[in-house]
Amino acid sequence: MDNGALSPVEWRISDKLVDYEPAVRTMEERVEAIRAGQAPELVWLLEHPPLYTAGTSAQDGDLVAPDRFPVHRSGRGGQFTYHGPGQRVGYAMLDLKRREPDVRKYVRDLEEWLIRALQRFNVKGERREGRVGIWVAGSDGSEAKIAAIGVRIRHWITFHGVSLNVDPELSHFDGIVPCGVREHGVTSLAAQGIFVSMAEADAALKGAWREVFG
Image (cartoon, rainbow, N blue to C red):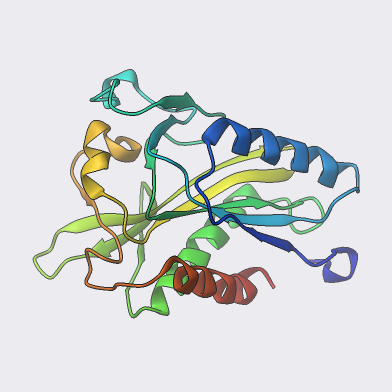
């Protein structure tokens, strides 16, 4: 990584719920500004109101309750996912051309970011071959997803990103087949018995980011 050529990453935290379409427009505008050299890279932490998003691989049959929440067709990779209060969304706008133009490495770094953030709460997040996202294993052998990943890259600049379930209403995931995985459920820090504020989750994400991305 050419750290000397990179300005410090800007961090933005939104305390109020952010609607999805304006968030996407903001990301797209920032991507163009980064490409033009007019703005630094950005990590944006926020919460959305309850909604479903469909990635480029989404299957219509995985939208179980189409009338439950608004459904947004998204240009990110992946399938259906849920966003809502109690879930910390992290949108990352990075210039991979100036960092390392390797999409697989970037996704793996996002996974490592989430894993290290969870470690700060003594939660063991794990990768699973063939399944995107970060998973938590139960003592009974069950597995549940605690964090999701869906990215888009334009001109080697990233946007969209990750979502970490801090304490969302998990029943809201019932309206979709999350990420197309029917065999396993979803979980959260709260469901694991870890009750933290969003500010504490943000601090963990910031600290883990420095370890992974510098």
